[in-house]
Length: 262
Image (cartoon, rainbow, N blue to C red; front, side, top):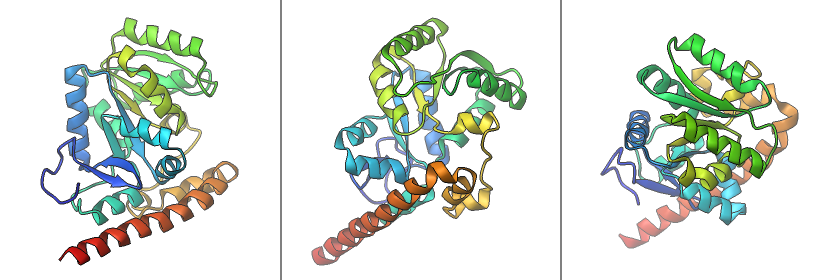
C-alpha cells in the first residue's frame, strides 16, 4: 500500500523487503500505543531496523513474527527513507526508546513492567526511570540473562505480569530474541508489549545515546559502532551493505513498474 492517504492510520503499512512497516509519524505511533493500552490488547510492537529487515529476508519465519505485530515501528532513518520512497511521505522515525520515554512522561497513570537485561540490570533501569520520572509506577520487573529465554523463566515472567496487572510491558531482549518472545506470550500476557532493544543498556549506563543530529542523519549506527566495535562491526558491514543493495533494487523496480503503467 502506498500514498499519503490515511496518514497515521495504524493499519497503514509499507512493505520494506517483505516486512510490513507501519507508516506513522511519531505522534501517530504514540496514539496507536495509547489505544492498545486503553483497550488492554495482548499485542506487541516490534521495531524495524536495517538488521531486522535483513533477518526477515534471510528467515521468513522471523519476518512472519514481525509482521504479526500490532505495530512495526520505523526504528531507523534508512527504514524511514525506504517508506518515503514507497510513497509514505509523512513517515517519521519512531525509535522505540524515545516512544518509551515519551509514554513515561505523558501517562503518569500507566503501570510499567520491565523484562530483560542481565541479573540486577532491571533494578538499575527502574531506578533510572524513577529519577527521570518521579512518581512513575513500576509494577514489576524480571531479568532475562539467558538467550533464548528458558521456558521455565518465561512461565515465571508471564505469571508475574498477570499478577502485577501492568498497563504495558517494555521488553529489552534485543533483536531478534524480543520479537520471538513477545509473539510467543502475547495471548497469555493480555497487555501490550513493546520491544525496546538496547534501551536497558542505555538506562543502565552501559551505552550512551547518540546525538539527535546523528539520529536524524541516519548515523546512529556509526555512534553505536564506536561504542561496541567488536560486537557490531560484522553486523553492520554485512547487513547494512546488503540492505542498500536490496532496498535500491526494490525501489528501482517499483519506479520502473509505475513508469511502465503510465
